[in-house]
Length: 278
Image (cartoon, rainbow, N blue to C red; front, side, top):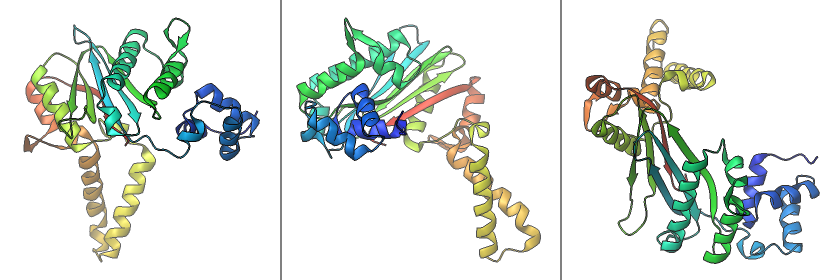
């Protein structure tokens, strides 16, 4: 079997607009060489490959779907090349249909989603490829989130009034509180935390921050005896930047997000934030 990664498959899909299985087969035949795989797809006449090669899909929309009982929800990003297509009804219909399919089937991951059948005899990958052809642009589906259990809510943010939402946030609380869910989701949309709590931050990331903090402190000429305390303070500052529960709350920066949740008697169990193209 050829030596290539999932990232190579993704790159080839973005370069050509071809389906996942076609890309994998092309990489197998090209021994993992992406450039040769592009050429192979063009030679085999994959529809739209030559036209889409080199294009980037950095526009698009984020859509959400929350169940009637608010115990489950989906957040999904569908990308395209231009904002003109992104704000079109056909594109948004495709995005919403994909979100509904995720809600109905709960795929384990992206590969499972793309391989699943959305219509009789048609996989999600084929459905996206069909949108590629019908809309005349490269259409890319490569991110979604799905939560179930507890209380699930979404916040969708438009960066421009005439465009569909470009930022979406899905939150899950341990119990129902619509106002807190909305406030925290809006906070996450604005401040883009990476982790829920300190335990989620990879140990190597923390150690790297500690090394940088120590090197910076020495460069600044801080007293040797004070270094441990200074370093710890800077690492704690890093946590306050990337951990949502430790961030200063958007609506009251004298309180942390954790404090706001505690006052409301609820817990944030997980979140997902998707911004188009990022």
